[in-house]
Image (cartoon, rainbow, N blue to C red; front, top):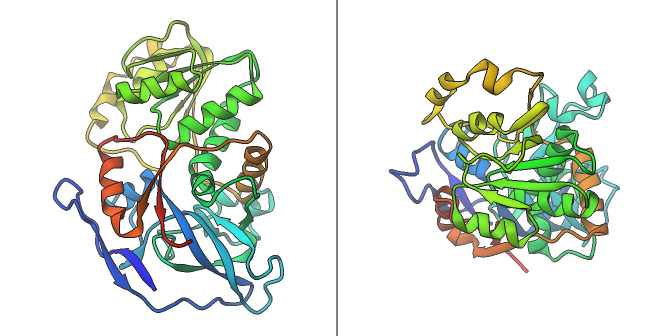
Length: 343
């Protein structure tokens, strides 16, 4: 099969084409696994973290990608949940132990044996992959393959972030950064919480304009003060400065949810500027998002089909994965980026 592989950690500023197109052996499904013929795979900021070593794969070469849509091509022994030809989605969660306290509580994302698609095992920047059947989700007919792909991570992690933000209708919500995940959160809020105003902080003028188009009440630069203090803010940026700026805009008792698997080190000194009375006092909270659980994927896909939530996206050929990644690195974003692998 054709695949774009990462062969080692590198800095994108020095290696603008970190992935190489190769031919790998076709995978074979094991017990209770599916072989999936991949049609689309979304491009996520987490891939940049893997490439640059902030969340490094345990071995190389590795096929990145965890926003995957495809069709069941073969059933492994003992696989019974799906039929041949069924369309399925695969997210960041590839597997967990299934028996620890966290797994029994439905929090497989916190399992010590959590395995990530496209990091711990080969992912979706390829023509085929295998997945334990319990971690694949059916995709509703309302979505095209390209519309469905970003839902597998950007949408699901946005859904979990919104749940952790503990926002109810009529409260105020901020979104710091406005890429694939944040624009889907805004669409969710507009549907589920019509009396909640959303304020967007983004350093890109294009992203701010896009946020207003989608219904944001206000959009300003990351360092600007919002027109009013906010009940909750979801940060989707890869750096530290927006975290400190967001804390200034929280009201007493407000909650900041950091939706990032890692933060870049380049501005970590900004954390020394945190002033307890200004940034943290009056019972402000900081909460992080760690991965997604099966429940997040299942619930979000169902909700997205009901609304329906259809992400904005740009398509690229599999061979153009490096270009898509570099555009993401340079914040050339309008919605989500999706690799076109098969039809």
